[in-house]
Image (tube, rainbow, N blue to C red; front, side):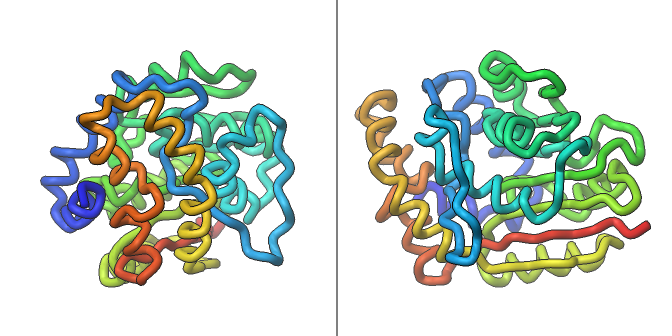
Length: 269
């Protein structure tokens, strides 16, 4: 119920600005859990999508990694300069740098402690983490070939302002890659924002069932982490936020009360 309440408040920009940053600051500062580098709900690929081969040490995060992989795979990132807005605990940016061979990978997050945790946890040549606001991205015009945003923009005060900034820092012909969830009406508003951004919406796909399957398959990993690291008095609330099997998030995605989409958008030259 906690996570659903938070999502229901995303219609109100003032509340979004007020509540999300402190939540992510606290999670990064207080829960420095070994091998927990992702905060998305995961992804189970379609049958036509090729199987992702992972290094042994990355298998524990297979499902949240797959959400990044099957989004990033929509274009060829080898040698490109990529910005992730809302990089959280840094696992996604680190994965893209390592598996997709981007020339430069920058993870940006508004939460200071999330950036600090990412800097401490992930080390690779060409991989950087910086603090910044999605609605005022601290980079010059046309600085990146790709901007990626994973399960994050529902927390922003103004999605149109964010899209304006994403377009600004993208080079001509560059791509904006995005996944996120909303109520069906909220997703329609997001789609309208994308159409009105001045960029070309090339692909959109409902991946709600893929995310539901990922939640169900990742359940043993989540439960072990919760039992090991989360105080007993907080486990029930945290389980709802984490989206375990049987949580309201899981039920709503399964029923269609919430929908989860994948988008590929291009800045035309």
